[in-house]
Length: 247
Image (cartoon, rainbow, N blue to C red):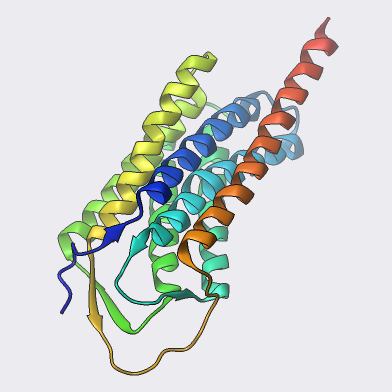
């Protein structure tokens, strides 16, 4: 039986997981500003989707996937492609629901709480689906207390993120809160990882996508960073056009 805290981490990938989480959070905050001001439902949905891709896909899912590759579980791990993809979709959908509910119409504490719970549990579901996508010669179980702690962290982090997305003015505040959101997202992930208990299994395992973890982690980082930078550039271009239109 492996002790559950015998996981070794690759420091560079851990650092990259935090960086992508901050970049994703910052991009999401930049895009989310446009949601309340969007003229018409379709425009609003466009901004919601952009912010959700940045938050759910970049800040949360990419962070999670890179961090999973940063962990040396002491055995070869590959990934089930369909479950991994499903976990990405969950992260984006959960973020989109929260952003849409909080971003449209009158803001209220009730809406924020409901959205925080929905988005937070969506993020947790994404995390544990991503964990379930791991194919390795071991069965996984979780420490109950830590498992529930990770759910609480996810819900609180989501509520805070959604509140910040619509209550912040100014670039510096957004950057500061992106740093905090990065810590929250990583906190949820690494708590979930710490809750992990592995029981080695003897039988050979089905195969999935298998690349050296460092390579896989770095590729996810690069692709996510490119997508996030493009989203940021688009948002800057749109706000520039809006300023010109008002002149």
